Length: 295
Image (cartoon, rainbow, N blue to C red):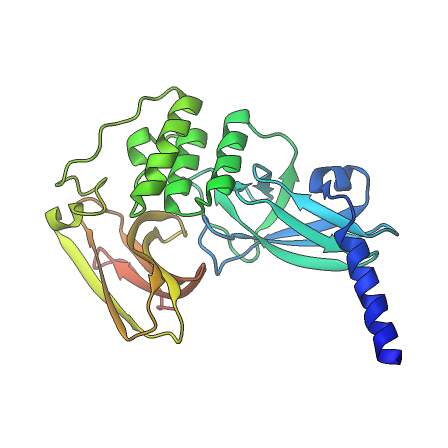
């Protein structure tokens, strides 16, 4: 009887939170109902879940906080990238309670450094209409991958339409018309078979000076696995492998990139599994470059 009563009370409390009308994070902050801390999350690439958001309910009521796509988070240290959220989230908070969520977001400034765990962010209220529309579209179509990141850079930075590329050709086809509409830039013709930079299906066959490596692994269940080539400051320059349905068998996955195209002094090859960086390998392109230890 006592256990039944306790269970009923817990259910009623949870139901009260669930039935609360959602309030946007911006409005909740304006009304002083919540406070927050936003930090970088280094285990995620900058285009997946790079922000760790801690929200506290400072009110005496149950709250359901809505985090919309298109919110801008500015770093306190301007050497790091600005972020724009790319997925709607709902967070239920009882009075006086706090919770932590990893936000889907993408960076808007490819020339700046990727986030660190120590990076602090501040929520900004203004965002360009074009970037907001793109973020909402990425959320609706579930395009939280490298193709979406390139689209964000095309709208928010100096990237061209021809830079919206990747292994997911369906995602590219969805993004190009919208980004063209938002920027006024024409849609480029499809890449030629020998176009290494743009054709992720066949272009690898036309590398002039390839640098290769392998990752060996086996997981107990199906995993979303990708391998990316990153600058040493944490910003991706090319995806080298992508299989969202990697089977639970022993895998030897080879990666390669063209050193005639990617010419910085050093790069980092990162293996990302279910959104988390699990391995990384430093590659010195010049003999006089001091390599950092591998992860």
